[in-house]
Image (cartoon, rainbow over all chains, first blue to last red; front, side):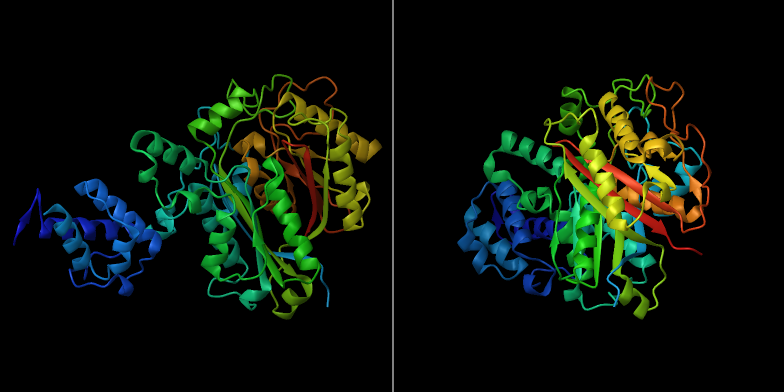
Length: 84
Length: 401
């Protein structure tokens, strides 16, 4: 597992899952390949998720980034890429 | 088909607990929901009733409205689904302030962490129409839907607006109510700053020593249905909403007209709308805030309308038990008043021990008493007045059992 500054992909994934649970999702079954479209997640949640990872990792997430995100893995990859 | 308006369900979240029966039974027993000078709904935990997601997306005033609406709709037999097409059901929920705790929290976030840190939920939580929208969404109510904004008359005004909607035939039913969660630092400081709240922290309407209202929180929701449609579906009827009167003082931003002219016109209008004379009224549910100005002007207004009968009709204030629920008050008072009529009980004005000079109505001090029967279904009016000079009066009667 490649390590990015202060956060492994596993840690990032865990943080995203934690946020989704805060939004009201059940933790069971949430994994990297989980698609947001299959969850009860809407645009307000995605904006909030973007804020959480911006705060957590000190990166910037644009609306255009959010448009490309479909899965938890996509979020992890985005954060890793920005941190690299 | 009759477009008269019947009440088929009621729900309440108040400082006396969750539930309409809890409210009426505890008030009738002379119990108080006020503690340390405020009236919080301490028993209310939104996650007992709502999913984490629903609770998270709603300010406290909306959470309370959702829970009161669930209770009212369950009583009306709507738990599974509305008995009408959702397009044929309206929803009007009033509030005095809206999502004030959201505003306060998010203002702190903005000052401490900058505008980029604002929650995307800030606007949908703080908007005063959020409760109406959330109740409509939860139950699939797709008729006319909005919030009323008339300060402490907002809850009663929502009831009146829904009544008219049903009477006009716009909808078969309308879910109405009021919700407020203003027991917050900014809200409490603001009301204290204008001298409206009690420094002693005691709600004692009509007492010589009264020094302001005690701030409270809660929600009340009522299911209104067209009498004809309710009869068709053989719905159990709790009572009838028979009159609505609304006027403005156009006198002062916050002070009521000392002669109570606007309030008196609203009472007269509600009784005219109901087709009754003041002599038919068995009980007056007062606005009775425990402020020096309201309790005097309201007394004057009752005297204007009731004339010789003013001193014999029982008048009492729920605010003596649960404080002032601001924009929720009028709706919660409809729930309580209907409960009193149904029980045949006149609930008391608590803490009234030293009557003020000139305040000489029968305020039912201290203890409840049986409601006198006049050979017709028991009839009450409920008064609600708001800063801005809003006067709203509703007339209702219990269904004869």
